[in-house]
Length: 256
Image (cartoon, rainbow, N blue to C red; front, side, top):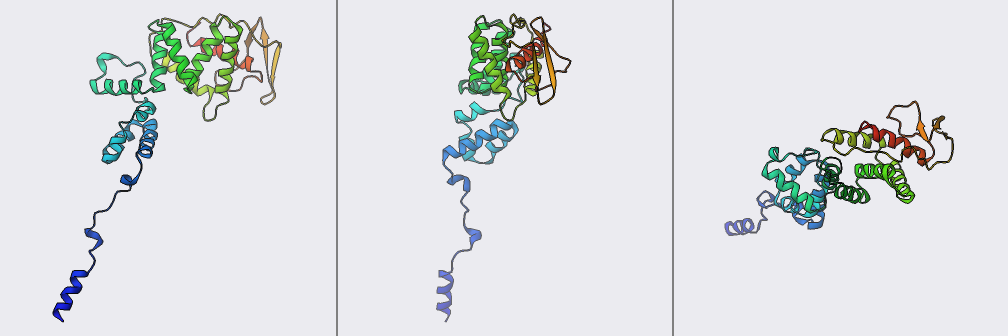
């Protein structure tokens, strides 16, 4: 009987408490891990640091270029000063730039165009960021086309880009304008916007009526005037009227 008891104890399955649990993260494919970390990075740098510390798998995934491409820049100065930027921060921003981070491209374009007078390069970077989906870059680029393009085709492109932005879900022109204004106020502006086309309208009507708000915008001397604050996100039914009015608000940022 004693030997039988010993045999049963030997064959008795081990307690689950003694088994090493398999992490669910270890079973996920690397592409999914990179996507998860990229989503976190696009929303919060603080959360990115936390997820990197959570396990080896997420730490390795965080080094993928996709993560740097989508990393949020909200914790970094709009115009970083070299003497206030440490080596670790500089290295991170460089990786973001190399990976094609659109926020970096937009910020560089703004500084180049408006502050350091590298106008052509600045416009090129703003165009790149705009056409790839960066909202503030699309706003600025569309305004610059409407303001200073010599040919009608280029001006129409500006109005079309502005219309696309206005019809985008999850974004308002008011919010976009405020963020751009904040950026402009954060740097030393040497190249102001001279809206040479502001007096030229592609709308042939003398008035433009908005059925949603029952407001009428009257065009006087080829310029649009209305008694509204810069918080109106739905000025007129005509995209050219809307664009011209928005251009006047954009120009005010430079006290033109």
